[in-house]
Length: 134
Image 1 (cartoon, rainbow, N blue to C red):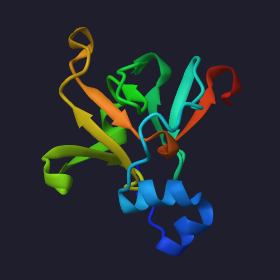
Image 2 (cartoon, rainbow, N blue to C red; image 1 turned 180 degrees about the vertical axis):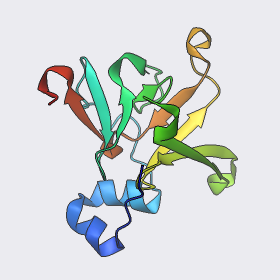
Image 3 (tube, helix red, strand yellow; image 1 turned 60 degrees about the horizontal axis):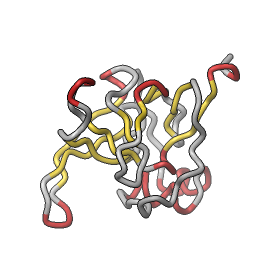
Image 4 (cartoon, rainbow, N blue to C red; image 1 turned 90 degrees about the vertical axis):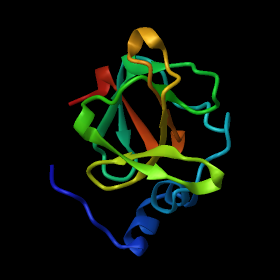
C-alpha cells in the first residue's frame, strides 16, 4: 500500500473543518455527537483517503460515545503509536495509508472477540453499504 501525502492546505480543501481537526490535527469529537453513522452490512472507510478500515460485523455498542470496533478489517489497515497527551498513556490508531488520526485502541473490549476496543471518531469514517459496493 503506497502512502498518500498531502499538504495541510490540500487536506483542508478536501475535508470539513471537524474532519480536518480530528484526522490531521489529532483532535477528538465530542462523545455521543456522531450518532448518524449508518448501520447495516458494509465497510467503514477512511474519510481522508478512502482506505477500507473496519467491517460492520466488528462494530459494537461499547457505550463510550464513539463508534467502537473489535478489530480492523485487516491488521495492516491501521497503525498504532504511543499517545502521551492529556496526562495519559494510550495507543493512538491512525490510517496506515494516509496517517489520519482515527482514535485510540483500548484493552477493554469484548473478551470473546479478542479483548480490544477500537474507539474511533465517527467523523474520520465514511460508510459504504455492502449493497452499494462496486
